[in-house]
Image (cartoon, rainbow over all chains, first blue to last red; front, side):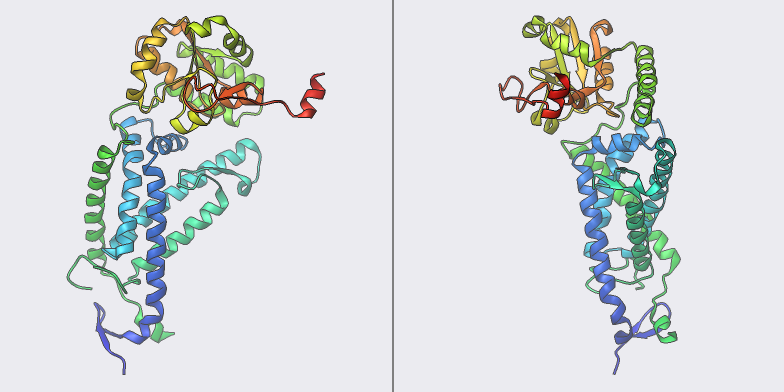
Length: 173
Length: 219
């Protein structure tokens, strides 16, 4: 007999969803742990992150650049902790997507510029992208980021509820 | 397949958007407070990158392939900021100058603590312009009394040396005595010059001898 669980859509059975829930929890912890680690690495040396940010030529406005370099690492740590604890998971996953997508685009854009200037293959380009892991091969970083985006999408779809302190801030599940 | 799809939870879009907005606002507030409380935190209103043209010139030098054109371009950009460029010959001459022992020729290392302590030009003062308050009381009087000041960082695309030189210039040090060693510490060690580890004047000197191949070529 399968115990029933009420959702926005109606009723679904626990045993049917369990096979997707445990990988969801593992994914939530993995994504959360990665963001805490990457955020702390940058938060402890924000001036290094600021130097790396300047490489992207996003803006010359010092207040804006300083705010990103000072705030983004702690914001990542905050989001990572929420995922690990299982609080507001879908909202947090959406925010991670909103950070990962533009960041991956600017990394790729810079990699393409270097590839053109130095006449090397795109996948041979390596630099410190400000991701918190030092100098990396950019192709590898892009693949990693795409996987993290997929993981975020999975959590956004509502998986990873098991062992979550408060999966959703709203009253409905 | 249909059963698996049926198990997929739907996500109420409005709730997720509101949740993301709440988390975003709370996260940004916490992030800015954490930065303000952190001893390593950045001052949001400070311009950490004075001399925007020099930043562009360093990027050019890091990606350029023509060494002569790159050096000329760098020198022109430095002149536009009122700074003088020092090459390795001038730096070696100034390092050997007896005035260095009287602090009339001063070397300033613009890198952070970890890099400075793992090796710097012997006798160099440290001035990390991201955290100047820790160094200014020592460095500023020395720079005011000096005849020549050579500022360096890692070299390559590192911009800290020119930004520190501009910082010193803005603090009232005459630009006529400020030199930027663009080759930086990487070039210094590549030239097998002596380095000092630990604190300034720790006397922990290391002299890197050239590999045998280089010595044979030199002969």
